[in-house]
Amino acid sequence: MKTREYKIITQALSAYGPDAQLVQLMEECSELAVAAAHYRRNREGAREALLEELADVRIMSMQIEALIDPRGNEAEYVFERKIERLAAKLARRSAT
Image (tube, rainbow, N blue to C red; front, side, top):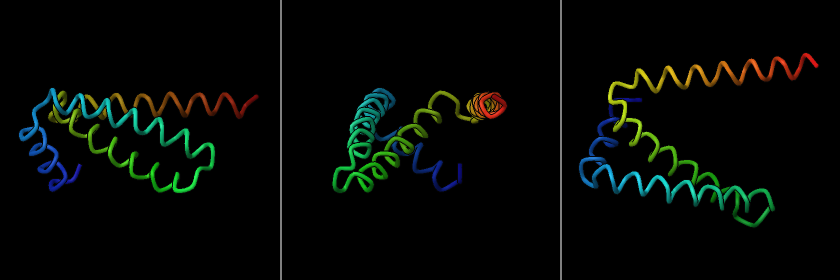
C-alpha cells in the first residue's frame, strides 16, 4: 500500500473507529453483491455501479487489513498462498 493511501486508511479507522468500519465493510460487500447481480443481468449503468462498489470494498478491505495486520506481513502471506492455490487449480483444470 502506498504511503498516502496508508495515511488516509489509518485516518479513517481513527476517525470512525474499528467497529463502525467493520459494519461499513459488511454493507459495502452487500452492495457489491447487488451490483454484481445487476451487471450479470446487463442492467443499464451496472458496469459503472460495479466499479464503484469494487472500489468501496477495496477501500474498506484495506482499512480492516490495516486494523488486523498493521505491518501487512501476514495478509500478504495469506494473499500469496491463495494466489498460488488458484494457480494450481487452474493448472489442474487446463491439464484435463
